[in-house]
Image: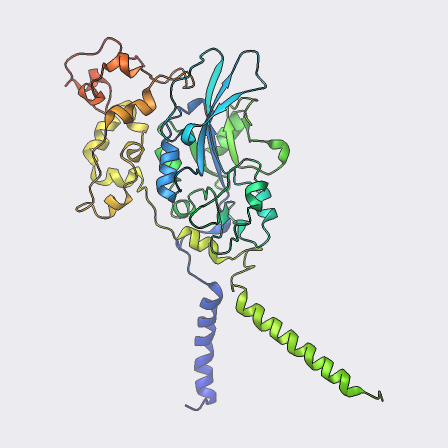
Length: 243
Length: 165
């Protein structure tokens, strides 16, 4: 086929359209989801947590988390009256099957659900030598499994102990804030099943999200604020002893 | 003119070949979406979003099980999502005819939330199941979707140790 001027003029726009698709890469899973219109966070209301372990079980099932590893877990704190600075913390099987009754009852007891804090300035992404972990434009820290070398730098860097190496894939793994759900307009698996509403997914870029009113009217903290990680899991009613 | 210009040309040729090889190799090895949003593979975002879900969400359940949804609205368990007890049911929602949820054991499920524990919030209804039920299954008296006994009216007697809340 000879490329005449006429044919070239017809072919060029078609090639331009095709090139656009090449550049765009794989199409978005959720076509109406705009990366720049969200900034995800989570609210954990400690006085509401009953330590039932529903979140841990739901997370394991939703994300196929290997047995004995946790993307989210629940800790039970026990504070004796005179040892407020030295809490006794336990998390049997991550709190997956709930907690047995406390042996010592004197003092203060409460549950603290933990998960990745999806830090805006996350230490784990800063240390990754290959760019396998990153903060998405909508504020979720993800791991690119196909790019991760399994060097474990990020596991050491996370001040909250939220990462582990998946023994099957030998790559870093962590809470993805159920990215496959939130981009489809659903809430995370843990928030979905929490029977008391102790966990709530929040979108800080959505002005209608109830998080804004909550943050204004409650005393809310993040874990280890002195690390300046820009943590986005907000804890309401958190005791000062929580690490 | 310089005496051994040929040497310089050869050197330049080697460098040009090395440069071309580097550029071609880099283009072949680095994924095309790397750097799209930052120092990572941009496609990884879409890949993370494309994974299938396991929990259908209570809105999906309620679309078919309207009778249960109406029952729940009358009791305190209205705030408890279906999959908190029934487990992940997205597969059942996709194919309700062939994939059926398994039967649940109330003795385990109810106790997970309602077994007395000093770390639970004081206002949350809690019982010591051994004293409260004496080995009976919870659903002997309580209907899990609407657990208060007076409301359902189908229970014989209200146990004396029933936690009031």
